[in-house]
Amino acid sequence: MKTTIKSITLLFTAMFVCAINLYGQDMFNARRLTFDSAQEGFPTWSPDGKSIIYQYTDLNDTSGNNGLWKISQDGTRKKQVFKGLAEHPKWSPDGRYIVFDADTGKTINMIPADGGTPIIFLPDTIHIKHGGLPCWSPDASQIAFLEGSELSLCIYNIKTGNIDCIFSKEGMLPFPGCWSDDGKSVLIALMDRQTKKSTIWKISSDGKERKQIIGHHERFYRHLALSPDGSLLVYAVAEGRYLGLYIMSSEGGISLPLTVTPWNHNESPSWSPDGKKVAFTSTRSDNHDIWIMDINTQEIKKKLLMLNKAR
Image 1 (cartoon, rainbow, N blue to C red):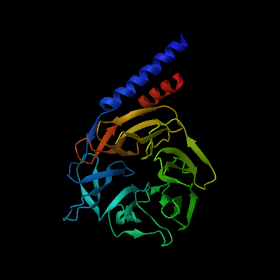
Image 2: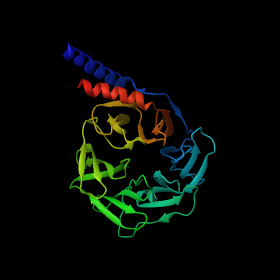
Image 3: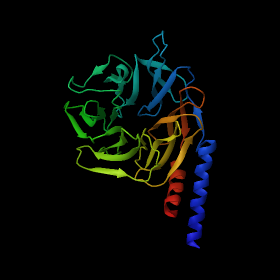
Image 4: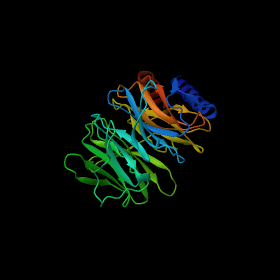
């Protein structure tokens, strides 16, 4: 009887995932936050959860709108905080700064959260190519990033200015995604440069410990986002030519589709500080826009627990 129930559960799960892959579905209600015709993406929440900063990119821009913009989570009080090409912004946990890829991915800069003159903090000996994907440690004392020459995962210490390159692997790209909630490790997407296939790894901040997170979707791409309590991990999956977002336990196991829409990208997830919302980029409106989804983490955890027990 137990085997039968387990088989039925797994069959139902497979049918559920298959249906979502075919027709597309949001696990919870999602609403559109931005409506400009330019590409708007890579949202990052303020520590108080009231605002979001995102990148604005229009290759035909003649009005100086390219850069970083701040908007309240209800869509009001929109304000530009940086002019110029900027990508992959991350708001510091102490609320003071925004770090981002600048100069079409050739440098990493920092600005005060309300805007101001860019701060160039990396020395000339450190090279960035095609973006360093900078991300803050939970205490805002360190920034993890991808160094371009040796393709290494490196960490910059805000107080000392020291830079430690903690991980690299021949033929692989270690894309930093986020830090663990205790600040002791960095979660990365380790991509094979030939096959473009990726795996998820947790690398300790001193580089001495390395652990693979097993059980994610086999077509995992990148865009890692850890929930504020450290229990859930959202990541992007290649659905043919497009990306969908899946969610699983941060320790690994079966994953569930969070938002998968046919013939559209859903990527760059960012959790609100209270863990009740996820902002992400979607092209479902025939344009790159910011969307916000309400999240019931308890419901997700119950479903994941049931599915992992049934394996």
